[in-house]
Image (cartoon, rainbow, N blue to C red; front, side, top):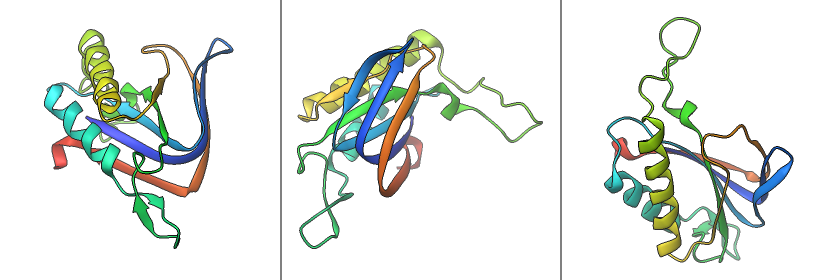
Length: 148
């Protein structure tokens, strides 16, 4: 499972000009589910992200988590993160989880964050979405549950 975290002062996702999720201070998380990912990957990443200290404290040091700042997460499913770009000029998506499995694990990841008291807003799984954010920093990290 791959997550791209972007520290944001605001974020919003729309589907067909309809807002499906919107946050102020927190994280915009692009989440890709690959074949072989499972609930353990979702739980691991959710726990790591919720406690990851990437928000500034009073001295301007990255020392606070999304839980500490009472921030929110905007989680967007993005199967292209599981794409393979290494061969040819067109990406292959054979490594992405099948849609039903991907949706289940995407929802499971969101539920894990909620269990850690992180308010979660979402896009719409499998839909064409427009995502906008103001990246605070900019601060961006990539996490892969297989690299723990």
